Length: 260
Ligand code: FES
Image (cartoon, rainbow, N blue to C red):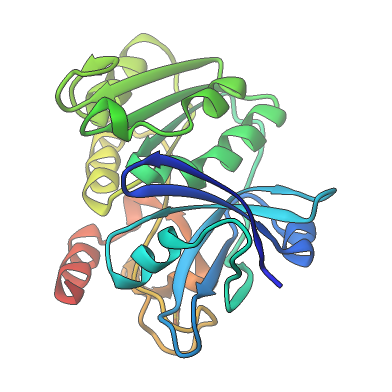
């Protein structure tokens, strides 16, 4: 059950795992996530499904080692198994042909963004993808993103790859040269906040996928709650995607920091 059949290191702390999970592979849609555990009593870690193969019955997960549990996951090798995987969870992404979609991924946020890029392209949209990271070695999945994008823009904080600057500069450069109908942003909360502030200036609909703390993933514990349009929402059952212009990012960032 849930055996790891492939493993690839994207960088020192970011690992791609392909895992046997045939039923999840069959029913997952872009935007869905799973909660995984390693070891009885292990911490429940939410991970977005970045791809699935219904023939092989596998799902692809991208994991960044940032704490004890994610370090344990990243240390798993081919042949090892997850103790359990629950999913697919959350609401699938709403995909339609809107025209031009700018998809922005920050760091490992590119992994959950990939199935959305693919689905947006397959729906007939022009897709401009912006991949952003601190340095060139933290840019992941560039080849896969290129396959489904009309254009890929790389932004790095230090200029070691692509253009030097933040993701918001890349978004603004596209907005200034062509009509953009939708922006999708997935990455660190601060990055999504500033992409949202940028697109708000131009009144461009923007969708974000929130990465809050989660425990049960079924709407019972309240750990993932966020305020959207003045109302409490649970990321695990109402999201993970929301209208960026309605999300209270400052509250979300404060709650994430409290956990640290
Ligand atoms: Fe418990 Fe969402 S993770 S309510």
